[in-house]
Amino acid sequence: MKYSFGKRSISDLAFYICLNGFMLLFAIVVIYPFLYIAALSFNQGRDALRGGITIWPRAFTTENYKIIFQDQQLFHAVMISVARTVLGTALSILLTGLVAFCFTKKNLIGRKFYTMLFLLPMYISAGLIPTFLAYRTFGLYNNFLVYIVPNLIWGYSIILMRTFFENLPPALEESAIIDGANEYDVFFRVIIPLSTAVFATIALFDAVWHWNYWFDTVMYTRDKDLETLISLLSKMLMERQASQISTLMANRRVQAITPEVLKAAMTIVTTLPIVMVYPFLQKYFIKGVMIGAVKA
Image (cartoon, rainbow, N blue to C red):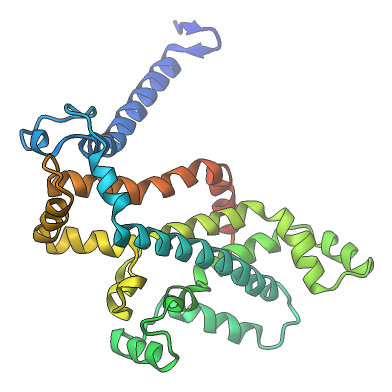
């Protein structure tokens, strides 16, 4: 005999209970490290050395964040990261959209050649030394544009956008052309308003990459004014420059701060902007990836 609760059987109910329990456990496992770092960042350094902090600071303080936001080098690094992320993402999705739109045209001369030209760097790289020499030749070495120009267009993004555009009704473009619109009018007034999902998806990919990437700062810049927040944090984490942190703390006469809690505060400052962006783009994310990946 098969019992049911409302419209669900016992087996269905058991499945949903197990599924929800697993998802709850998975969410706890994912969220706990972030909560721990947040609690550590708001905790006094000397007290944190005792250990035992979980998801709530034991000795609450905001001095860790005051050190970060009052230091001119760290604040300047944040501004460079923000400028790189905003400018790089905006130009990238615009140019990628234009290239993808061109690839939807069957009568484009050299269409296959251009497609191969843009997709080839996905599989083949010139190498570190030739890339460095090329950047220096074109004046990108130790230049803010080294963050923007080499990363304007990605082959994978072109594939997603092109496939998304090809799934739009062709009649919309045809009617716009009949009404006197040119190719630019079609792209900016028809394609872009109908492609919010894929543009938001690519923007999220690019923004996260620009915000988190630090290797180009290390390899292609020497000016401290061009240092990004992630590169500054990476140096502190990899090289463990505890002496510099201690000097900074001594100059500010902050006795309750240790390098560990300062690193935790910097981690939160680095992660929070991207975490705040996700809720606004999440509703477009799955739709943009799924529709843009139907075919290549």
